[in-house]
Each structure stands twice: as structure tokens, then as C-alpha cells.
Length: 71
Image 1 (cartoon, rainbow, N blue to C red):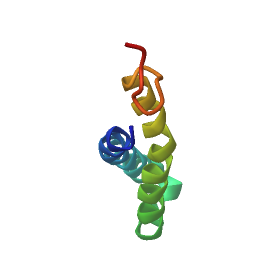
Image 2 (tube, rainbow, N blue to C red):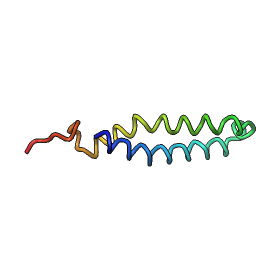
Image 3 (cartoon, rainbow, N blue to C red):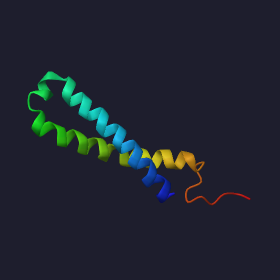
Image 4 (spheres, rainbow, N blue to C red):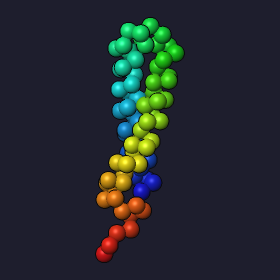
């Protein structure tokens, strides 16, 4: 499940980092200091994707944990 989780994290982290980047650029109070806010927003997007990728990977594996299922 770890491999699936890493693959999902790569994709989900990129999406959430892009969304947070757009939020920084669209909100005027954040955009005024965008040089400092963009790296924080991208880091938060990638960090938020870690637990979400575990949840998604668990759903992909059918909630079986390590992939051990009933035969």
C-alpha cells in the first residue's frame, strides 16, 4: 500500500500545491506579499496531500490494509 500511497501523493500533492498557489495569487492580501507566501502555500499543499493520499490508497486497496484479502 505504501507504493500506491506514494504514487497518489505525487499526483495529489501537485494538484493541491497548484490550487494553493492559485489561491495565493487570487487573494489580494496574499498576492501583495506573494514572494514569501508562494513557497509556504506550496509546502502546505504537499503536506496536506500526505494524509489524503493514505486515505485514497486505502480506498484503492479496498480497505484491506497491506493488500491481504480473503481468498
